[in-house]
Amino acid sequence: MDIYRKLLGSKIHNATVTQADLKYEGSITLSPELIEAANFIPHEAVQIWNSTTGTRLETYVIKGQSGSRDICINGAAAHLVKPGDVVIIARFVHIAEVDCRNFEPIVVFVDESNRIVQKRKEIPGPSISIPAAQVAVA
Image (cartoon, rainbow, N blue to C red; front, top):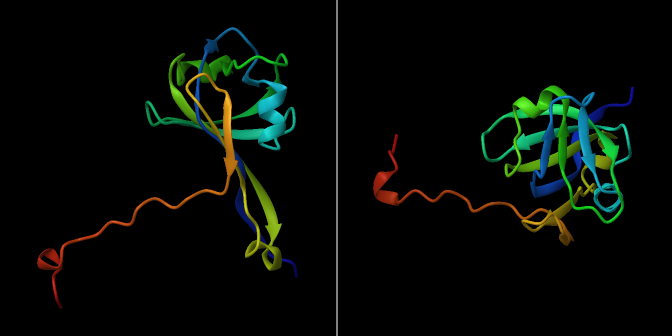
């Protein structure tokens, strides 16, 4: 029996929402350039993590206009995400366990205007260091 694990496939890190449209059917509109850089495809499910408010939601990708740097949250999700909010847009993939150890997700970094500035591996955050005097010894 094959075993699969759910791993981060790719993400767009710290994108700035430019529009929220409650009346639209639902989804997130991204430029073709961002879609391609993050290896997303139109209608693919993505998660949106709002770094500004802490909310999380799932929706799907719609291809916007080429050259646009708009990030538009559509439909009911517009209640949770507003223009100016900073978000992470992520997709997950299911990978056979035997292939997981060598898999690396795509991470796309954008500036405050949603211009792609870098694509690279994720760098782990700093570890928390507790001073020895504060560590309880059992």
